Image (cartoon, rainbow, N blue to C red; front, side):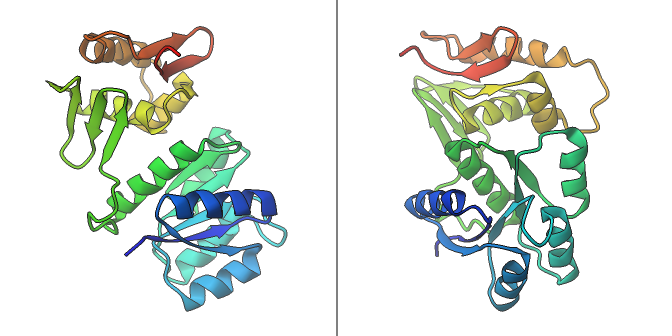
Length: 229
């Protein structure tokens, strides 16, 4: 069975784009344009995951997410937001949200995060190909925690694996140190942010043993997984 998704967004262009992209990726998709329609829709059907815009005509995404949880709707909620401040993200998590993607978003990253939520919630029965990320000759298997490049197994620590998984969710995207700290170490991390540089260095020594190098520093911005054009 294809995972069933509810897209709640009042912008027709965004909604139509998501419907087309997610159907292509194998999802079954329904839509709602505002909070009232969303509450009615989730009340009569079950969804494996909900994509929820933070700003709707009649409610905020956080308010709506709280209502879902009060209705005992346990579907993972992924916020679509133009806001990337830490306090905004935390308020979404406090409301019962599970993840967020900042607009304008990368569709590959969005789908990867959705698949991760499905795995986490136990709704992925294995029929949906969500357990393997591939970029060039680099392969990461989320289910078995195995990594290889050019067919050669690479041994990674749990933190190295999580960092590489984040980079592989959106190849060519530049991740800031702040984004990597949030994704890999969590919002409550109180250590030295230089730990990101340290672990990027560890990854390079293991992943970039073959040519060409994949893990790149984008000076003044962050880090990216990319291949030469």
